[in-house]
Image (tube, rainbow, N blue to C red):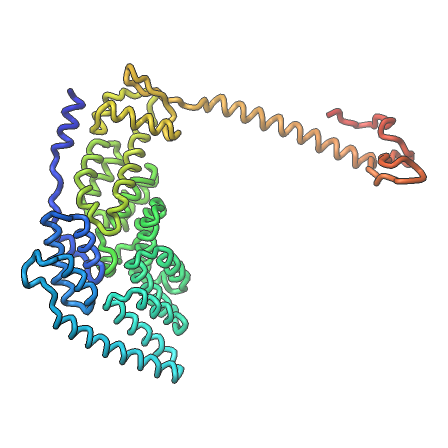
Length: 456
């Protein structure tokens, strides 16, 4: 009954309502639009879908990205009334204005190349890249930013080029490019002097590791982000994202010592984690072994986390790893564990918990055996004392063998026992070994025992 009441309490806990306006207000530029469209894709048939489409439509009409505008109008499909139907006149006007601007920039860039003015060429590539980026031509923008690299004259220019390339690569979801340009930026000699720039680079690196499922590396990068980053990277990540991404990856991969030193007492990361008090309390519950409260809080957060552009696809995997780590930490100090009591602690049934623990045992993540009849888990702790004695004995025997061999070699050298090359004719048979014993030739079979000879 105690287990059932705990489960019912857990299931009855309401999820936090998703405040779309508050969520998207933390972002600017393409990141805001990308997140809205991700929410649309994952809220089909819900009121949230139309709400996100309405905001996305209003936002995109303030930009020059007519291809995205056309895409959003098609997704609305007349469900929001006449005000949200295709505005062909606006599209034509924006396209005409942007085409004229692009032609002008290309002419200016050609002139700069003719005059061989490096700074003008660099700025020309950047201006053209910015225009193409605003138009939604990510491939063209990326090429322009990369081409500006050959005309960078200072390390600051190189870092700026890397950050522009990273921003576009993130939107293209090309994580190899992100990692490459993060590495290039980190090699710049002056990059460490600006904490905001360093924060952007670390945040981008953490995001690339998250997307490639290298969760521990992602956690390490996110917890290193400087608090000076603030809201300066909202066109890619908000400060809350640094806290959520880093906190969840840390819960899934850090041991207790790492969690305490790199997350809980990390003054820099603490400024981020305070922005998400629910996650802050969840991390503390996990560290203090309050697993029931921790897992309940995570489930409350799950619906909103699955709507996150970068985290949504990883929520299930991260949650599974967090739960596995919680189970392993729970059973590690004990010789035996009552599965009934453990089921209450993890808000689950005994049968489900038994199956879960059995899976960890099969994967060699938990060294134990289950008494299914009595519902008790018995730990199989290794005989550390016996293993230590066996290791010491083996090391002693190896040392003795090496000492005897060393003494033998020393005596051979002392008595000038030298192996000669085999002779093939005349003075001896082929393959016969001759030893010099004080100038007397002896066959190996008749070799006399020498003083100081060591029996092996």
